[in-house]
Structures are given as C-alpha cells and as structure tokens.
Image (cartoon, rainbow, N blue to C red; front, side, top):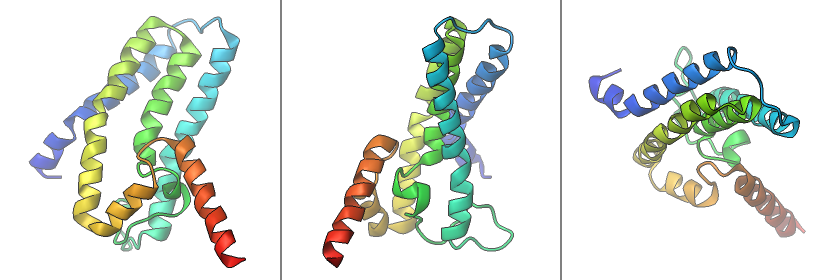
Length: 171
C-alpha cells in the first residue's frame, strides 16, 4: 500500500482502534439495565456481521476478481446482492457494530469510544465514492443514483420498487 493511500485511510484506521477499544472494554464493564436496548443492540451487532462479511462473497462472485487477488480488486461494478441495497455495506457495518455495542453495554465509556469511531469513518466513505467514480465512471454515477450509500432501509425500499417495476414491465 502506498504512503498516499495509507494517509488517505488514516482516519478509518483510528476509527478501527476506537472500535477495538470499545469491543475490549465492554468485557470489563457491567451490562446495561434496559433489556430492550440490549436486544436492539444485539440485532444491530448481528446486522453488522451481515453487512461486514457478505460483501466479501458478493464482490468475489460478481466482481470478476482475478484468481489470487483480494476480493477488493473487482474488475466490474457489483450492483447485485448486498450491493443492490447499499453502496458501502462494509462501511455500514462499522456504525452498526459500534451502535450495537453502545446499546448492549449502555455504559458512557463504550458510547464515548463508539461516537468518534463512527464519525472518523465518514471521510473514507466519501473517498470510496470518489474511487468508484474514477474506476467505473458513469456506470457508477447511475448506480449511486439508485442505491444509497448507507441507508439500508431506503435501499430495501428502492430495491423492492425496482423489482415491482420490472414485474409491471413483464406483464
């Protein structure tokens, strides 16, 4: 990785450190008293696993990755699977993970570690869109108009709308 690339991603690296600190610290603190928040937290945490791991499979399957290369070295734009819901599922995984831990623990220190972790990844999210535009051009621009960056609820709604439109066109 070149020095420039490393510098571009330093904020997300720091966000990763905050996230790891959040995860390690949670084991030493008492759990929160509000059971419903803990349940919601576990749901967020489980969603972070899905949004964090599924892209590896989808990029390799649909992205024409050369054998031996990382799943990140796609040769074509992937807009299927999880990428039909959000453009940046792995970036979405981090805030879901952080919020999940905040809700599970309900402790001020976990919240204090999670908030900067979420905020520090935002510049990399914009950088990822710039890289997509540079790599795929107008195809990416059209994709970005259809699929939201992180809003998976809106993404699911838009996906259903596209599918219904295709069904109407067939009939």
